[in-house]
Image 1 (cartoon, one colour):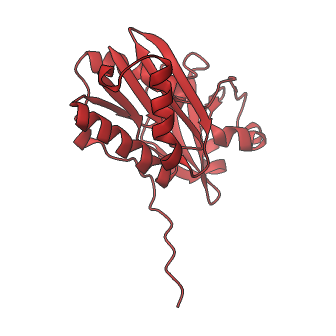
Image 2 (cartoon, helix red, strand yellow; image 1 turned 30 degrees about the horizontal axis):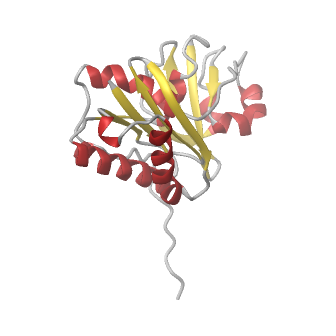
Image 3 (cartoon, rainbow, N blue to C red; image 1 turned 120 degrees about the vertical axis):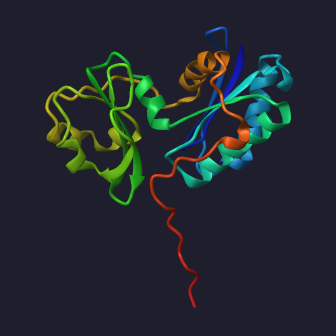
Length: 220
């Protein structure tokens, strides 16, 4: 089965194509507030390099959040449009879940942390197989860290920025070296689910917002 995956939850935009359990191609871009301009040309480039027509894609995968509000809208709307036009199923999952899947086997407990700004993080805790141990949340970092057991493995952009805080608050933390571009892992997660008929229709895709957008009222 040929699956196209898209992640635009952060500035690390990525696209990937997987078929028969193998990564066929992946495109990575560092895209700050330009997802809407770069995503479709990047998609066209990736498929052209694989000599693959858009109609050959049999399923789509997308990260639903948390992350950039603009990025989420661009990624979800693009996948919805492609899947609706082609009549193909979709696989949708949290970016935190994909991050955790990248460090399976790294420790008995896995923690995915994304920068939520305003002094907070988007956080998810997982077992050694990347199964969620509770719902994802938005939280100040230090109080959450102090609830964790020893030996947790960490991944995410907030880990890069706050490693010293993690080391100060946690006992024997682990930091597996992994890229934070997610589309390749997302596509590998999606293919067996879509092949087994566990996809969803494009119209049912919904973003995962862990807090409301910050909207400023116009001045007088």
